[in-house]
Image 1 (cartoon, rainbow, N blue to C red):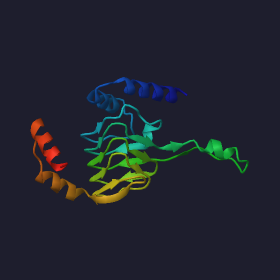
Image 2 (image 1 turned 180 degrees about the horizontal axis):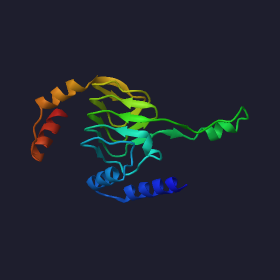
Image 3 (image 1 turned 90 degrees about the vertical axis):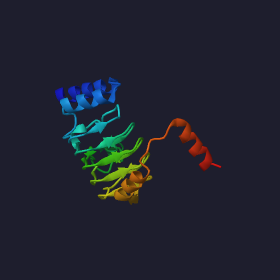
Image 4 (image 1 turned 120 degrees about the horizontal axis):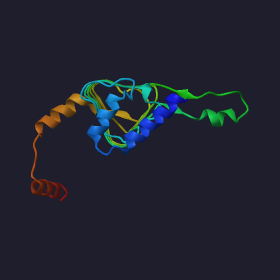
Amino acid sequence: MKDYTKNQLHRLRIALIINSDKRNKYIIKHKIFRSVGENFFFQPRFIPSDPQLIKFHNNDIVTSNVTFVNHDIFHLGLSKLGKGEFYYKNGCIEVMDNVYIGCNSTILSNVRIGPNAIVAAGSVVTKDVPPNSIVAGVPAKVIGKFDDYVNKRLETNRMYPIDMLWDKFENEKK
């Protein structure tokens, strides 16, 4: 019970830290996840209930409102069927090197996101993500290659002034 209470207090504290850099420092200092690699960035304000079942490697970016689901409580409903006793089901999640997880995505248990992968915003990852891939959708499916995206970004890797961005946007929408 002591670990459960400590876990809940950490979850509450993290939710109350507004600054994402300070949240990251707190997460790393208190070893909230099973492991965290170098250059880890975690923007969500809510930590999953079983964070010790999640490993992050190097250069991982987790953007806002990403949900990690490493357990379910469906055993409660199944046990009421009278067909036997069902138990709590949980599983691990591993995020390999150089992964970007877009906002509002959901990562389910027993999933490994391969190195050099992008999970597009709003995706639901139900199975392993292959290395060097971009996945999107519900459920998430491979829609492209990481290296192709990197090369495309390099071609257009410029900052534009705000007015120029609006001009470009409006011309494209005509």
